[in-house]
Image 1: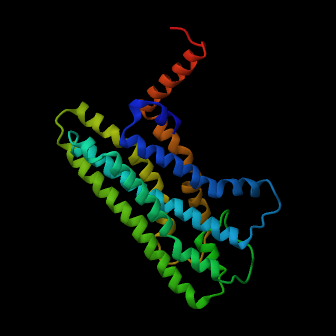
Image 2: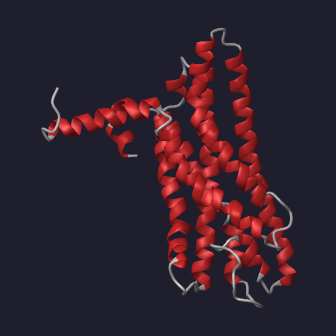
Length: 274
């Protein structure tokens, strides 16, 4: 984020979205990772119900926002490849800000109904959540409101299909059109260069959707399984850990910008010589 802000050559729509995405990843991991690290090093694993519901809500707020933001980034890459001459006139700063703001607004609204249900429901039976964070399935499994469980489960499944599958289909269609454009480029070097501009984003999409589709696009959420905890590690821990490496170390422009900024800092402090 600091590199994008400081380097003028990175002031483009693509890096604007990467900057927003990086901030989102900080928020996303902050919901679960601090609590997970505390629980791993403490015998006191008690979490109050309001805090548990808040953890559930904000995890799905940032997760839903990430879905919409990945769609915005896919649209940005499609526009850059399909309309390179009109790219700057289409992806204006106003359009970029609108797409980013819309992603955040939709993200905050998406999990509102399930979170409201969990905040007013009563929990009974065992008070042990078989998970390392307050996910929907473990909380629903302990709910005493048997009459409303089916309704809220159906609502959650419908929202998951709308947010996850809807954005995944949009991203798939965008990259399908991109691949068709790349296939018509006569030069192999031109095809590789064009494909490299969206390779990082495509890698992140595959890692992210490979796990969340299994987790949430299914009809039965009332019975949590041990496999859920393993899969949850991918989109809560592993994928956010890999994303800075994917967008940083695999990006030549980013690496060159880091070198320029490092050299400038060293020069200002008289630590480097030409």
